[in-house]
Image (cartoon, rainbow, N blue to C red; front, side, top):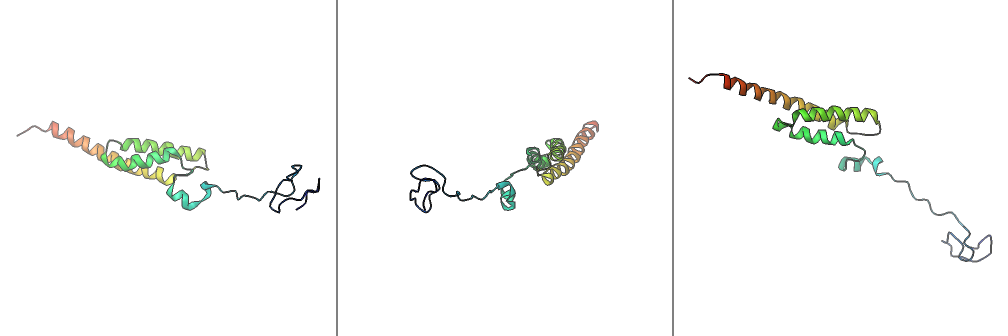
Length: 125
């Protein structure tokens, strides 16, 4: 390949002239790849998800221990608000899971607290 400016012969895959530095051909185009757009990768790695939604999902898992349950509800609601403010963020399912598990765990926590109060109020025979 010859340079159109100085006439120097260059290798066929040269982008710039070896003698004068003039661009003699276009560089190869690199595909614009975004990991956030790959659905298979998004299933494995929480790319583009709200951090609050991730936290709500994990706290929702621990809501079976009853004490974290109210926090799962709080994080789930905050995550839904975050996702609504930023439509590009994902994680609505995790947020809803945190809310549902938080509600179930809170019901269990209330039932446990009521049973403890009732047992203390009942006199021994």
